[in-house]
Image (cartoon, rainbow, N blue to C red; front, top):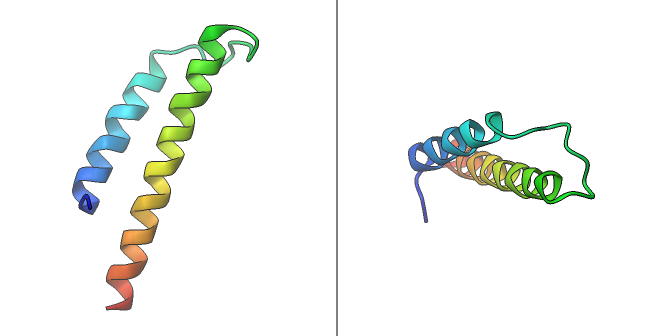
Length: 59
């Protein structure tokens, strides 16, 4: 399992990629679908970070 620091670095890399993409692209085109996929990856990493932080706080 990845550490919180590694996940935060991954989140920042994913966000950097998102900044280069068109967030207003329609979902019907390839660019819109790719943006949505990358956004979902960022959210999943955020959830993993939250889960690890809660586990650490509980210990």
